[in-house]
Picture 1 (cartoon, rainbow, N blue to C red):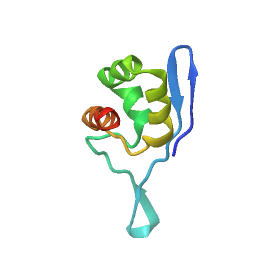
Picture 2: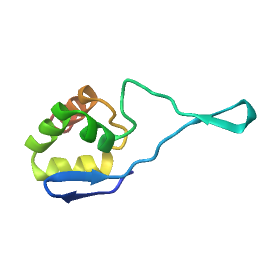
Picture 3: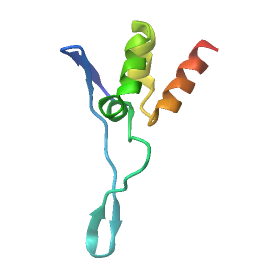
Length: 85
């Protein structure tokens, strides 16, 4: 779960990052086409951020609490659709 707060009209949340240990104890970060968490998605994808801002405060709050597995705009849309379905 991530924690979020609003500052100057933007949402700021923290999420964890991950890496994989390779030979010699070095860590290599993986770059995936998806983001690691909702906060990364909202920070980096303007379409996702704009969509998020159109949602009701109740839905945004629920996403902040339960949406830590959302890493793409399509997953965000599907999760919201599931909430309303």
